[in-house]
Length: 77
Image (cartoon, rainbow, N blue to C red; front, side, top):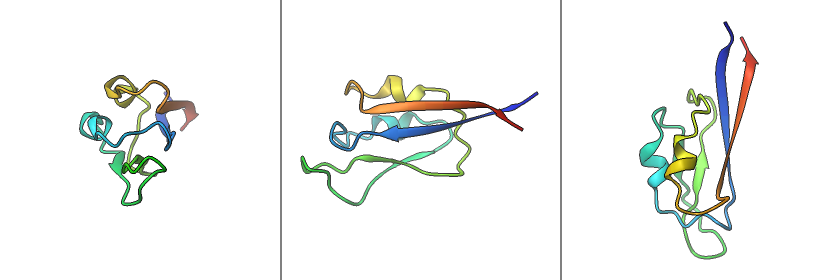
């Protein structure tokens, strides 16, 4: 059976840096950036190679529409 892997893309201009997605992520694949976005918030960042499964918990925890997009690749062995 193929191992499920995921990736999260964050729209920096929509993210308000609330950290709800970071707290909700079961694989700790997100963190808040040290840099500010154009609105003055620290947006979330996806951390590569941290075991993201593409579960989407971060997406549902986010109060900002379209701030997060979760991609799932089921073809990784």
